[in-house]
Image (cartoon, rainbow, N blue to C red; front, side):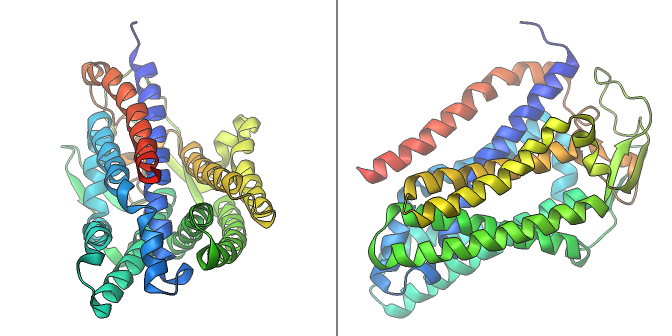
Amino acid sequence: MSLDYETLRLLWWALLVLGMIGFALAEGLLVGVTLLLKLSAKTDTDRQTVLNGITPAAMGLQAWLIAITALLFAAWPIVYTVAFSSFQAVLILMLVAWLGRLPGLYFRNASENADWRQNWDKALSYGGLLIAALLGIICGNLLKGVPFHLDSDMRIFFLGDFWGLLNPFALLLAAVSVTLFALYGAAFLQLKNSGDIYIASRSLMFKAGLAFLVLFALAGLWVTRLEGYHITSEFFPNGDANPLNKFVKRNDGLWLDNYEHQPSLWVIPALVFISAGVSLYLTKLHRSYFAFLATSITVVFSVLTVAISMFPFLLPSNRSLNSSLTIWDASASFNSLTMLLWPVIIALPLLAVLSRWSFWIERK
């Protein structure tokens, strides 16, 4: 089957979105459970029970981070480079939390000392909270625009600083991210446990769910007034990758353009509200399995909402608008996309199957 450059770029964008969904489901589970560790389990035994639910699968779920990084590098190397340059401080903080999580999961029981275990519990809880918040900050800055510039030689200049990334809109998205993953983690804990853990996680699910619905609505209202991005010049989906061969404008509400051109897309953010509400209703009925499925759908459509809103932009620049990176002008070469397409199409479903298998092994 022979595909043209435009179709290849669209397919790779779809694969990137699928990879981001897989990453959100996998990482969100680990983050959600760890950030609720001290809230859902009051005793040392209960905390170990909570961690036993994710520890056997933790290494497998962590593979999604490697997969999404490799996918971005393979398909959009310029985006990969600019993103790691712009979010360097944020990514370092996340890396510290990631590096501390696996030892905490696997070596918490290495000593019977109460202080040893409590310190690991704190590290896991604060690490989960930190990762959830920083993921939201990255998402908020992607929508708001990142302060970078590409010169005529394609050299990257980051024109901001770490504190500039902590703008009010990004902090709101951080709160949305924390409540979303707390909802997801509470649904998992409710599904896997009974007794005091079940009661605590059920209560936390209601609190996180209501907070998420309010914050997600506030973020949506803000986006209607947030400056979005739009390509004003003619662009060529089959053309060579050169981010500087276009003109971009920025104006309030432009992130809603795709929804205005295709009104059916409003179903995607609507399903975020519907699935989150359904998960709380099912929790009230003590239908833990279906409540967990509903929260998983909430995570999926939350990621899709951001992806559809930004299309075709991947990394907009708020300092040098024409340097903004899109799926059309920041991709790898035609030959590279063609050669790597089928390995990625095979790898992503295989990784999903292996992730699910790791929980089956844990249950056995």
